[in-house]
Length: 387
Image (cartoon, rainbow, N blue to C red; front, side, top):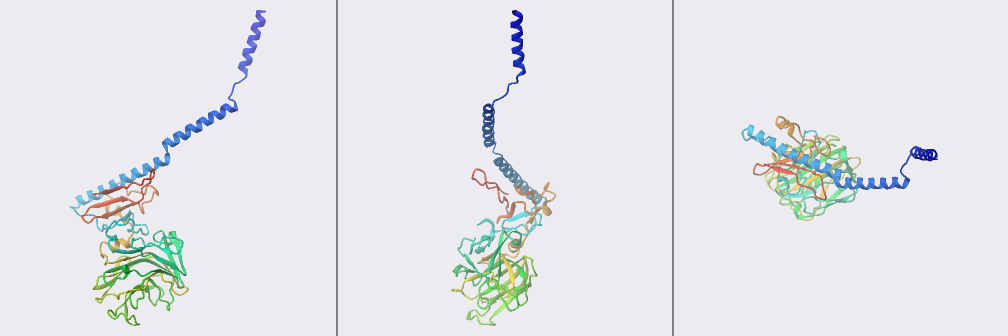
């Protein structure tokens, strides 16, 4: 009897060992659910996107400090001499290999905002509006054969191409009625040669009476033209003159500037003066004529315009005009022995435009700023060092 009971117990025990025990489906689902909840909690707590953004901003702060320290050390080693050609308005820092970045990025920052009457970035990309970023309300209306271009075709973000009578018209505003002390600036690229019989103007008014940048008789030449019969201001044919006929070539962006200080009209190509003409009468007073940008030539002529602007003063030819037409400030060529490396944009990893700006203040201070810090929890920090 004992032997039978023992055999039965051994059999049951062996049977129990041979049958593997596992989780039921319900148990597995519960465990997976718990793991998912724990993972979500941990992910929210860690928030890797936020941590990466914080790391990039920390890198930016370290970079701006390193740059301003390098400039300071350079200045001490050179007996108080700052690096040459430092801009007085914010300019991107890079290796000098990018195309262009507008120094007019942050309203009120730098001397270039002083006296700015109108700034048409032409970045809208669609619609009929051409907004004025100066804050003076000189908004234009796009009409006819004016189309927006984007990306690599443009200098800054977007631009416009005009042909066959297209135009951007800015309604009359007294702030644009400038008779002395004025600067006109724009980027322009000839895409298809302008017919000799067509005389479009890329910025300004009727030049026989007022002033404008417009085409010359040659398909790729441009000039600044103005009425010279003040005070009669009849605007008749012959009562005008031109300054600095410039061959812009084909499919190359150029920066054009004309300044007038009440005594001389000067024209600049890509930041370099090319002509000057004495003129003391002042431009004719305009009481009603609209201002025009990118007026289209006769077909098949076509050209592109970007970043057009007007000031109520003559810009400085040394500290301001070259800045408008320049590439990024090439820090590496000046401070190569003071920096371990030229910083790279933490977001893009490029150094052609590092994502930082530099400018010299009125009192000689050096200012370094990160242009596009990461926004964290709805707040975009200001990453800026001045010394």
